[in-house]
Length: 192
Image 1 (cartoon, one colour):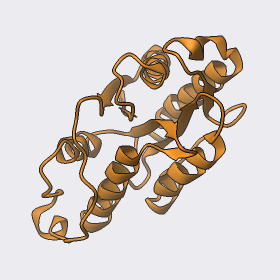
Image 2: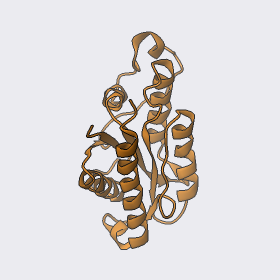
Image 3: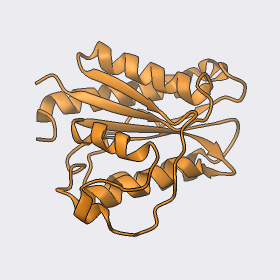
Image 4: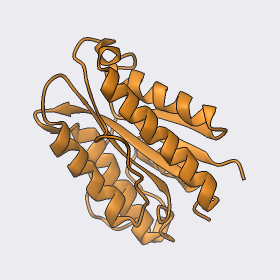
């Protein structure tokens, strides 16, 4: 089994630092022999969950934006990495809105996230990384997902596009994390 990792880039900037970090993670995963697909939120609308619970009957979220498409892609994935820029000390609102909706649909429909391998990555100019990683980590843990470690926490520093490459330790941390996601999927044979 080859395996596939879906990477969610939560930045509104298609060429920004979060996008560059996500591309590097995808490259590392592909180098490990797995498929990697990036789903970018740039230019997309994400509504907040309304707790209508129609996903229990419909099998997917009924709100009309990009999240139902993202959910369908996740159903076929073995891994899920979420990279978010830090806004005012926390993950970008669109990212958390998407994660909340994805989690509710999974819990309401065959728990398709269970045993999926992945984790969060935070990208910021100066601060809020730790709170952002912890905030997103709650999504992975409540959904019975497997989160491998790295040689540090998954955070990268950078402000202007491209500055993340100056944070050599941060970039190496997310490379190790991405490699561990791929290796763990290979060892457990996917979530199936």
